[in-house]
Image (cartoon, rainbow over all chains, first blue to last red; front, side, top):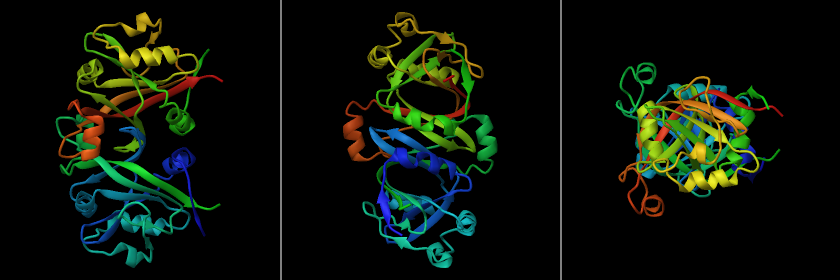
Length: 170
Length: 170
């Protein structure tokens, strides 16, 4: 099946609707190591005059190391039948698993960034980090600190410029 | 005209589409002082398990002081005929102007937060800041630093939980 380029407004609702069960965040390290993690959070819109996708990654994550090294990522919206991949990529670390290989997923070359896309997904965002900001204790409400950060494992928020969006031909 | 409650997916496209020409960000200080500013940037989605709206405010802005005092804001999507208000609220400071009064706009009481809505707008998001993060020199690309921050007037990013959304009855 081919892929066709599209605009943010064409895929915004579908992407938001897929945050539950999850999207796949793909990254690459400076040595070419590729990884995927499942994300259930994400923000879409405009920042710094650019279409933007914000993803949140905890500092303990392997993806954190990879995005910090290369400053790029892709967000991939899974289609039907990918629940197993979402579960695996949400619970296993890329330090211990080559998730692409173990799940038999295709790390296809992106058009604009070094991070791969997950070809089996139906929508793809290629992104380059414009700015990364850190969640801090002083800037965060007590309620969020208690519910999200009982182990002080804070997120870095990666604000990526969306360089290209494409999806499966329908 | 009455207002009806709605879900994020009902108004996401329309809100994104209105970032240009602009949305109205309304805030309130600890002493009750109300202000409005025009925003052309914003991110919508899910963060910390909540529907979320991120707005970016430069540290020089009067709105920055107000949101830091009370931790709440509303985002309002203007309808037709509000270009003058968008222009005024994008160029004049609340330090020197009571924008609600001068523009003859109605600061209507919100249902869940202290910040008012701009009643003449067509869609309203009531938000409480969950976390605020700061754009930093070290976390930001050279390209963004040069194009957005030639005067080092950095943004604080306010990640607000969307507590309620409603819109004009159609």
